[in-house]
Length: 182
Image 1 (cartoon, rainbow, N blue to C red):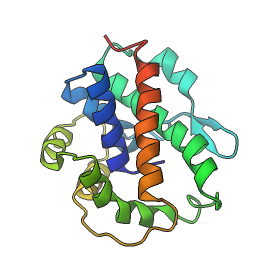
Image 2: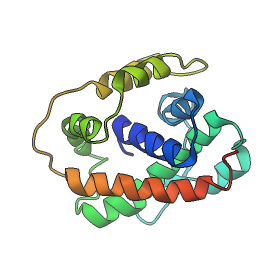
Image 3: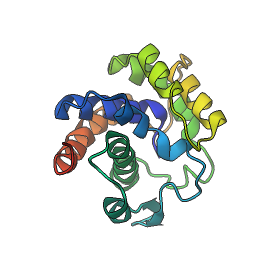
């Protein structure tokens, strides 16, 4: 699954495209990774790995609520990242098993935040207001990653290719969400 900055970038681009100005939408874009629920993604077997069960969530979520629309956006990004970006750009499909991609996340995070002009302070404020049955440690760790300024050469994620993917997938997700955003 992609890193926190990727989810916040897609949240920003989709919210701009669909004119969603609601902090709940931003919060929903991180929830699947921080809720205390082992089934937060309801994964099913995809082409080469487990992916979120999008059909399950279409039936279960109230996509008129911005929080749940954000949750759905997160899951769509996860699905497209795994089925499109990884499959088309990364030869080593064991990057999650051996945790290799997480170092790339650390190194590309700052570059993505800068490139997409994310307002980290505003995001930290919104995300720190999340309540409910969440793992506070996971939330704090994700908020911390938004400010990570450590950069280095990445092994799997190319900044330009990955940025292009984020732009393109935001368009794709926006088209999907137009059916639900009210």
